[in-house]
Length: 149
Image (cartoon, rainbow, N blue to C red; front, side):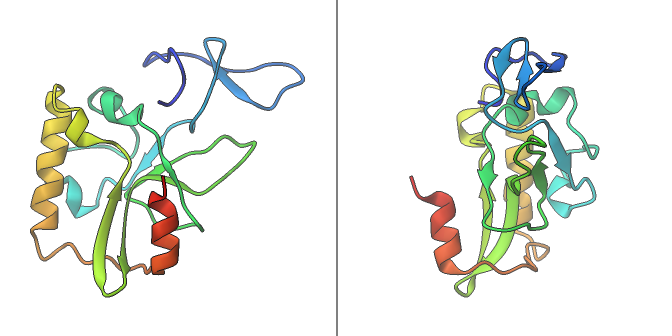
């Protein structure tokens, strides 16, 4: 969950003497928004801009993954300036001779939202296409650390 009791148009607040972001008085547990690679072919069936808007609400409130190092992300989570960790909600990479698309959005659990169904369909179409050819590499140990529960 992004920020507890978060609403789409909530105001960001930094209390005097603190460097921890809050929304409506609740501490942010995640980042401050998403930066989306709108030109990426994964969005062929899901029109978007480089930032979230109404159709992203269900997905944007999901947790992000902290990456082992800065990487090019399809959907990057903008972390709090207090931490500036490399974070992503959607990233692709090669690993151990294979291709990986890692999502932390839990689209399979958001199927009550038509926008999540549309994004998942676009993801499946991309995975089945020749365009799914990640350029960055992640070592198997790094990938395992991303999904360690």
